[in-house]
Image (cartoon, rainbow, N blue to C red; front, side, top):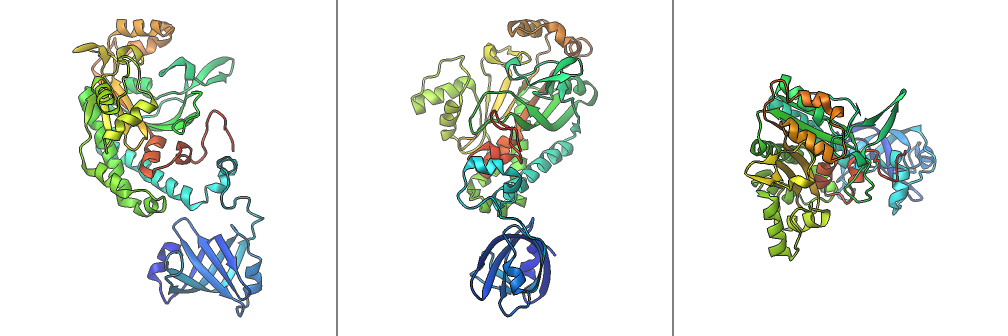
Length: 425
């Protein structure tokens, strides 16, 4: 029986299966904290029990089957205790290498074991809800799930961050984004979404970057930048509501201020332009950022001090944008693009744009980047045969999980993080 059923079983005898999370013993009594995937429960066994000597041999993280009577006990961690009648060790664990106050690097070395911690278990449960919410949101809104190849012959987000892969007698690259293939799909399915692994060889050591991460992306025909921004707002609000509905216990365990998420679930998300963002930074933070420079982490953090919900920033300078982002006809110095920034210093969680449908502009932008337009002939075909306005964005799943959970590092938002310095276990 699951430990979560313990509170409803006071006075009854239960059998639970789990692992020894903590153990404390004295001369005549042993206290076990047993965990399973749902919760923990305190179990006690006294020296008058025939299993007492066997229980003394049970170590931390040993797997056990425990049978006993449930009682209320306010002194125990969850307010309930099981008086052990029988305890069966399934496997006696060796000396566990993780103890209190271990370094971050050691915990990463033992990530395969640290996943058992209540902290990471809570994060993974919230991640599960986030991922499920993404699928539900798009499917309920008429989007088709569409898969793109992980091996891709050309770049989408900048050649310097490509991971090169030997492909038989040739060279290809790990995907930076599903986008280019999604643009092909919208001419058939109109509205598509995907969630899959993404790879960026960024030489960054910040708490916001991973070399391998998961991106939830969406692409839709007939959609402009305003519609795209609203879609992103609706998706993020839906995700937060789902987490509040299903994961309050996990948020509390992580020490998350739930009231901040409740505000996000109800309050409108503002939209401002890049130029307006610079004005806020200058007037309210005394930061003069030259127009044309991208917003760095420090500028994003200072800007978001003035918002308690995510915001959408539009119309970044065209010169610093990817080749597929078109000029805004109302202000050709800027692009029809958007980022969503999360509050509390979590930075960009979504990036997207309308897609340029002008072949000449695309070729010019590619050449400026040092790319050969011939490598994008199939992509240009999409502009030759029934082209329509379309837009899309990508959401960093780990960044959203980090923000919702209030994590110090994005590395804890994914089971096995891959960074510039770490590719194992």
